[in-house]
Amino acid sequence: MNSPKNTEAEIIKALAANGGIASAAAPALGLHPQYLRQLIRENPAFKAVQTDAKESLVDLAESKLIKGVNEGNPTFVIFTLKTLGKDRGYRQGMEVTGREGGPIEVGTVDMSKLSMEALKEIRAASLQVESDVDEQG
Image (cartoon, rainbow, N blue to C red; front, side, top):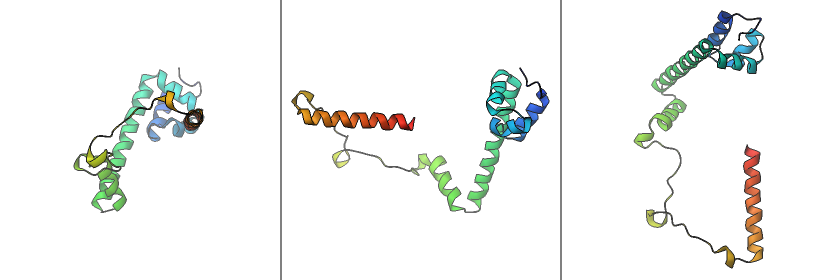
């Protein structure tokens, strides 16, 4: 289950030192990141170390966020309000409503009454959307 070159202790140490991020720990071990990810999936001890290291990394980031807010850094303040202050009205985006704040009205189209030209345009637009979605993956 372990790499023939690395002991379990070495793998655990590398994961802990690199925030549980396999692609960062792998070079220190001389392993391909994908192989290290496989070892992590197969070994509960490695998975536990990875989880703990990532939690510690998030804790560190949160402490830096708190420090930035306390220092009045506008970027940190805005980020905190957009993420943690949503329930207080600090949201990015907009609410979309229908006429005079009412519900959005959705109608239907009788496709049998459209011209062949209109149907071709709809088909072309549909294919373009499908292509765009495929490209975004």
